[in-house]
Length: 298
Image 1 (tube, helix red, strand yellow):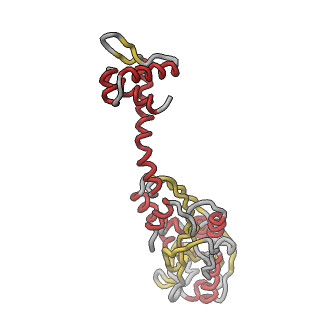
Image 2: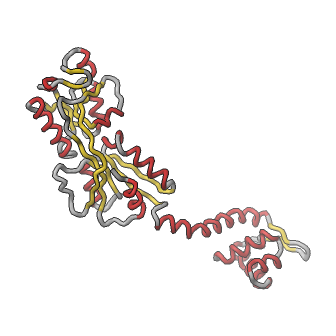
Image 3: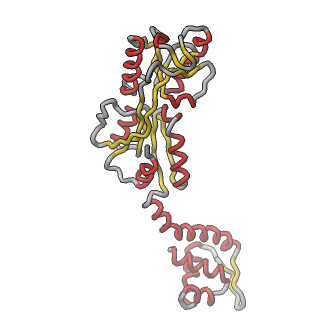
């Protein structure tokens, strides 16, 4: 069978009259009757009960009509679906992100993009910056939100756009503040507060720029960093702080991650800043990616 026969069947089912259906289709009645009989032979069951005075759908024909209408409606929508796919208004977007972005720019970006393009299916994957870059270079995924290398030395196959720059703050065990173990003034730590304090940090292999920024900041403040624990997820780092294992330097947006037993404090003096941005394959022309990049502006 072909779509022509399906349209013939629908026209007769709608009019229950071969003559009117033929006129509606712009053809004569004999070819229409032959088309319906050929369709019935192919299906192995009659679609209509015909008498000299009337035409009626058989129970089988009435049930099949529901599926035929859906199929023809789907065919009619194909041009519009093609336009949406071509213009990036439908399809899929694979977006990865570092855990810090989950508390800063990611929710706003996804909400804004989804509101503009509700027909696009977004697949979100949390991953460290190094994994995201390797994945993109391997031809997988569309874009990632990363902490870029400090020297901006991304592979030439990738493009990058800065989205956010925010200060680092200290996440400290609340019990340490209550016990007077960390000198502070209001919500700002004193310069001597971090001297010799145990530090929880991202592994350098996963986020070298972040790791180096934390270490250099602690060295400038207290002469060094006594690293006692590494973790690749920000939620895990904050949980370890809550357990009293040490302090962590985190982006200011982590204040949005409220956790019992953790207090966020400003660092002494003018704190350092951490950059986050979006990275993608420069040669990727996926329409949904182009739409996302138009939304993902600093």
